[in-house]
Length: 202
Ligand code: MN3
Image: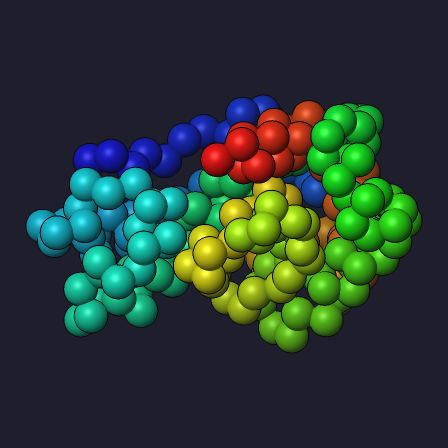
């Protein structure tokens, strides 16, 4: 089996007070783990059993029709969270090639932040807000519903925010906007920069 469920690269309390330890624990060990378990179970014994999840999401036509919707929901849930954990860290400075590209594309960091907040705030119901690199190597802000992945529409994600209620409800209840604003205090710009550089070199 190629796909693996990994521990977080930090402790559950590492993002306090912006994301509380209990939310991180449930989010990772229950929600994320369930997507992974379902994904593995669904593809077991099929032609896509030994394909990396990102490859599968980028090439959805290879998934058998009879299991396609369920596979996509769970593959997305598995892969989206894998990336989400990686781009979270406190006290990382906004800098590097990605910072320059953001300023060039959106005019300023503040403007980028406003646009990203708007995408996250207006995602109706469950979903994600994203900063992606498009086919022309330009940055775009998008939002997706449920566990849909930008990979399935030819976009490479480098930054994302989970706006499902399970991501913030214990601490923030209905205050999604406060959760979204605090997200900007825990972006691991070093990691996002690394992802950006890798993506534009491809
Ligand atoms: Mn989630």
